[in-house]
Image (cartoon, rainbow, N blue to C red; front, side):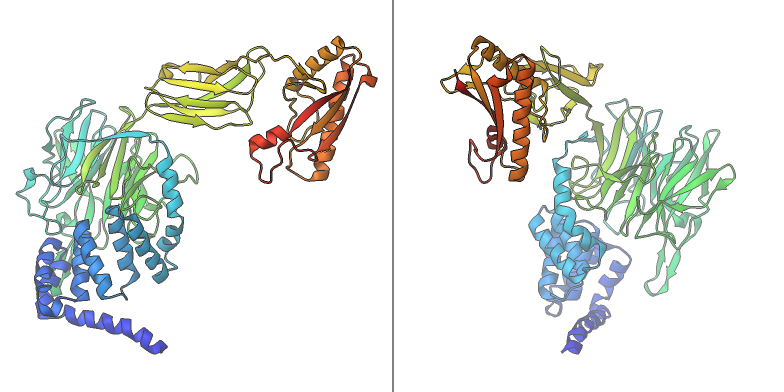
Length: 629
């Protein structure tokens, strides 16, 4: 039985290979192998009309993969669904890709089902392990407040791919595009778009003027993205290795397979001297250059030997004589997946895209501070990242504007990321008469568009992140104090990050009944029996009552809540009762007129099995019983 179970998948795999050699699929297969997916799709669709291929797992898989590679998520979903129904014994990777497609279609429950199947088929895969913690991760990031307002750059976006934008010191915006102006270049068979060129446009802080190609850098192949040194005299840009006559020949399919390579353009008078990067090869690609502000460190992505996954981010020292030895940035940045589109800001924050860290789907953008040893890469959050590919984030520290690319609308488009001005302010509460700090104040912060709450904090540290452009009110309330509303305006112009709010205490006279003197709660520190300042204020009122009634004798009953052990609570309450008695005596009351005892949790005011904090509070009390009036 075991032998048959292992034989069946091998037999199916062999059958797929036999079909691949079929003369009917040869044309489609050759187009697929040349990455001309649009043309391959047309040929495979012709095949599924034939009876022989109407239920062909092989053709279904080729169609699903082709649509996946051009990110036609609707059709990819259709053919992955057909493939899995036709052949339940598909490889786990099929279910992983199908899950990615379903996520892009916002079909999250179905995507999770496919990921569950992937986990069963590939339990040791690092992506399977990450899947288990992803749901809580996404919730945490989605709930976090955003740092950016995002808007598309409509003046530059076209119906083709537009990406890789960044702004230089002289307000020139460079980007990569496959727009119609370069339609004379051979169209790319992969997705029917023209080859990529490098473009530039001027930016005045709000608007972009018409773009124009950077003719000095563009070739008949793919060109871009690029990075420019701070002085503007050196450009690092990507082009294809065909420019160096570097490629591999594949005789069976009559193919010349090139790689992406890095090229260096140095300004000489009014022209550019272009030379290839010495590490270019026909065995691996180099992409996404990013030069540091001082020009001494060059970052790039590559699948060169030493790479952890499909593509890693590397760094190399730029010297007077050339370059040092490339260094992989390690597991702080790279994973077993795909890391690309690096950018280093003037303050040494490295931005990059990854498809294998915990994220929202496809490529997500992350940031890591290169000035901090063992720093952790952080996801830029739900405003920037989506269920589709988000990448190529750059940030201009002078203008304080970010730029990135997303295909959330089905095509690679350029976006601006405008930082939202925020200021963190600490609220400190004080008694208006004693000027002492007050703890456990209920604080509600609201503005014109939303309500947000600051949680109670026993350490009296209330931190809230305010938007600079909004006006706020802080509504404060606490038992024993007058409710108060405080206006908080012009946050951006505040010189202090601390807001002191003084609450007015409510003076209440003791209530004298036939059996007891009723005071406001006498508070003790947690697990302590010493009299607090607030407790002393109330006990002073009892002293006044006893001085006004010279024959009055008082018995102090001290109670705890039902937390903790009964024996401990009894001991603690008795200590508090004796501390109360000693305080009254210290104020001149004869010791024969006052006595006390602790009752622990033996006489709960609110009997409850699972008490709320409010009920616990009622049970923690001191009673002042009149034994002689």
